[in-house]
Image: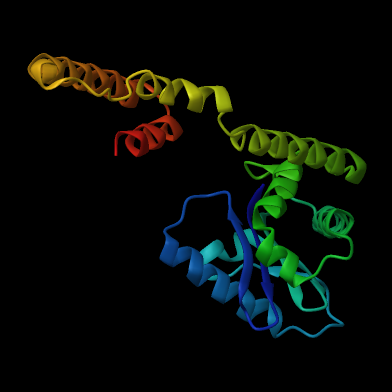
Length: 222
């Protein structure tokens, strides 16, 4: 089982951390620092796996890693996982990132963290390997990205002009009229009742409509 997946740069700055067991936030940060210390001091010519740090389980677990340019990709696994199999999985992960981001670099992991997590979720779930076929992973990620874009476009649809007209219609039909002095008393009473009627309509609209309609209603009342 995979316990954790960590990516950090040559200076120990974490770029991705995914833990499949519960740790406190402080413990996670300590694991990242300890793992970086263990991996970064190793020579480039030695093998790419070693015993895990004390915080991640010690000799019962293994750290399997690859070093690409400025980034370390580290998988913390238990003894049931194959070292060579995990090395291949890391390679598939990196090649998939490279395909999705067209020559991936450290900045892509910083500014597109959500997409990186989506790619990883297609490969590993709950510490178990789900998919290693790069073409299938890319297909699923692209389908998810397309769905997210369609949802964003749907939420950005602005209210139609007819809706604004319906909000303004009550005011347009109740313009003030000039009246004779003898009729001012009754006209004032009618105007007051009309005003109250309009107020009730607008209050009702405000409490039952969307945020856009509420803003428009307040603007009209002023």
